[in-house]
Length: 80
Image 1 (cartoon, rainbow, N blue to C red):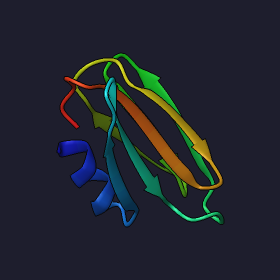
Image 2: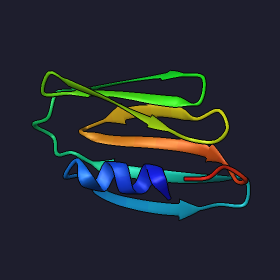
Image 3: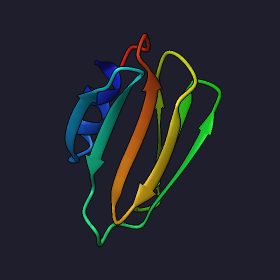
């Protein structure tokens, strides 16, 4: 749950969903936010308001941004 906690501490409204083959975290930063995301290994790098922070996860995540919502998808075994 470390990723969930880290996103919540950044002021994002976070939802966690479990599917048969993956876990998904969705963090709503709001549409006015300028957010970029990148994945390097097991780390999701988020840049918002000129500030950068890393979210470490187990496994290889996929991450993307749409309309101010950061979505991180992890294998079902991954610790989120």
